[in-house]
Length: 112
Image (cartoon, rainbow, N blue to C red; front, side, top):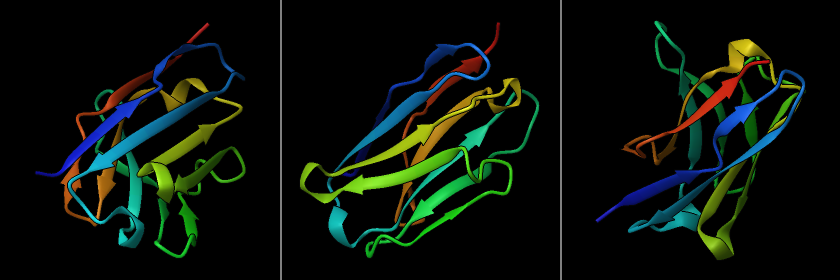
């Protein structure tokens, strides 16, 4: 059974930072492309960042230069380091594995 468990969300002030984690089980993590998505209030779910099994990364234009996706294959975990957070980054952030499996999400709220 595939399971993706996100953590690290919370309330942060504009300009602040958070690091999200996604612990994967039930898949061959080291061979899996991993991704972070988000869905803000009243918005469509959007792709934020991806990382392939070889470590290649891609980012949405809205987060380039502020967010960094990384992975630790020994820990079956993918991370999303989010810096210089803005109110428009407020969303439920989801982890996705192999373009198939979804986690339950972790809430990020950016507000003063």
